[in-house]
Length: 125
Image (cartoon, rainbow, N blue to C red; front, top):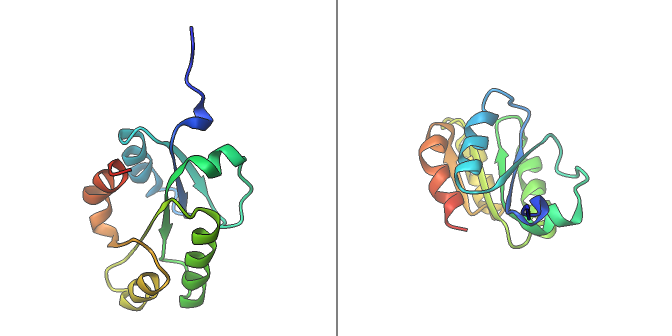
């Protein structure tokens, strides 16, 4: 019996240390037919097949400074040019939202919007 190669399956990378919010992102990824990878750092080592199959990079803006948001946008664009970049954070962090938009994130969401919008955004791949 042939089993699909997991490395060929599209992936979602979640850059966050929020282990309590991770299941929301994981459920959306799995519902969209994607693998889920929880990462704490933007420079985490990944197998080339995972990098190539990455459909979306999701970044929790909460702990990041404005400079780190700009850096994250640049790193993700360079490393995952074909992936959709999605950022989210508390709705009161308006400066973080502006920085993420300026850094080239495709979608910037309030944390309360993630559960409702993420399944659709990931399914558009």
